[in-house]
Image 1 (cartoon, rainbow, N blue to C red):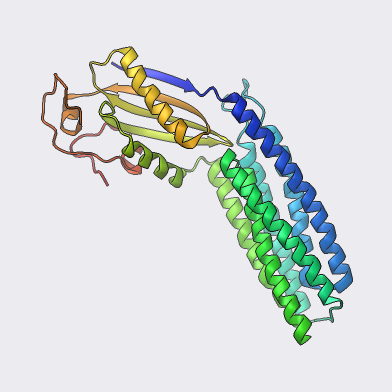
Image 2: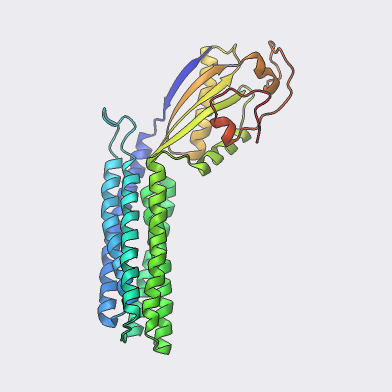
Length: 347
């Protein structure tokens, strides 16, 4: 018996609520980025510090990325349609890729300027006021970044997580600038300003690379190893005796949505309703753990005589062979397109 079963989680209201929260938060992040940019420009105008200007230029990327992110969240919230049967969630990956590219370009520009100005160090004035203003922006950036990451993980939004990580990275680089300004204040070694700008630019370039790398992985449907590890752990801990084996598992992320399909081997003598019940239990298990909107497509396979050796079912009246070996599910064996048997590796 082979049963195809498709489940579309009816949590549209929760998904809509999460999407609205994502868009609203991204709007606040854009507003904060604009305000902090103005503060940094003012601090640069007062002090003439290249490292502060570097921080301000990096904030322009925050503004552009925030605007792009807000638009991408608007696009990703659109429901499925004929041209986009899986929804518009991929827009978040594209937006994050653009953001990462902008961050990298800004970092390269800053590095060039820092090296150029290293040989033409100039005096910085009103350093104490600059330290106060830049410290204020660092605190606001860090708090905004933590909120973004927390909300992004809760709502499974790559855009918010990317924005949050970017803001926190910006905070670390700003912290280095503050430290350098303190040194300049006490030592009057003006070249420190250019050295700091160069170091910060390297951090920015690396941050941009990581954002682009993550985005490309999402666009190319690269396997999310951590997500798979969590699912495998969950399945092993809650495995039912009628779930003889699970294979050909694939997960694709579309923004806040997950599309999951797999093959589940159940006893051959279960009727359609009973097999349907096992699949419902599998679906409920995944949903209660991950909370996302999940599309689960399960191909239900009937067990074969070779399955007896790995089957845990105690009251099976049609068993042809004794149980010999427990096959622990791993990322490797649940991803392969073959039914498990006694020779299937459990590592």
